Image (cartoon, rainbow, N blue to C red; front, side, top):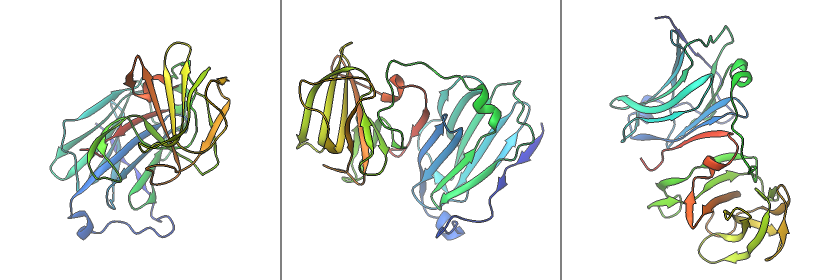
Amino acid sequence: MMRKFLSLVSATCAGAVLATDSVLAKANRLETFVFNLSENRIEFSTQAAVQPKGMVITDPTRLVIDLPGTVFHRPTVKRPIGNPIQEVRVGQPEPGTTRLVVEFAPDFQMGNEPLYLTPLSPKHWSVQLPSQVAALQQRARSSFIWPLIGELTAGFGWRIHPISGEKRLHKGIDIAAPIGTPIFAAADGVVKEAGWDDSGYGNKVVIKHFDGTETLYAHTNRLFVSVGQTVKQGQPIAEVGSTGRSTGPHLHFEVLKEEQLLDPLAVLPLRYILFDVAAS
């Protein structure tokens, strides 16, 4: 088995200080792990500063990133993807270390293109994957479009609520973008709700689509549509805001079918593979 280590970036981003041994000695945890297919990049964030260690293992090819000083109190999580990346998984091979693994197809050759672990902040790192990964990656088709292109900051499922600190079901996904960024209808439909919601959503829009599915767009700033209005896919319906119970400007997006919540990432075009592990 051949191994070669990832090249770690020696310079930190502006204002960032890499984790010291005293920081890593404290309890830390993985918050998010995102595979951004559209930008061919992996990003991950932790609760506190971390100094990751990475390497590429060949025969078969795997990208392995260890996060020293982090805990992962759950069984290994796996996500099948396709070709050339067959699977992405997160687990804890030994106490005090969380491991991120990207497994490539058996016949995939990484080539000589260097890989870098790049710190966006002491708690937020990224790895740009080789260009041939993007060229080979299969994309799934969908009848929906993304309502907003921005930074995916939270996924669907149970998590620690950022305001209450309680473990709660996050009913959709969060996409961060500057205030005023247009939000688009994910598909054709009729506006069912448009206005203020006292439960925490702030300004929201709900669209009923012709297949019975409903989409919800929350924490918006200005609304561009009204109840009963017919909208087309890609039509601006609102703009990004931070209304209601929100910690910053973003879109909270939900999908419901027959009154059942769906993971929006399961119905949107394949753009991200998200591991939202904050609740662990």
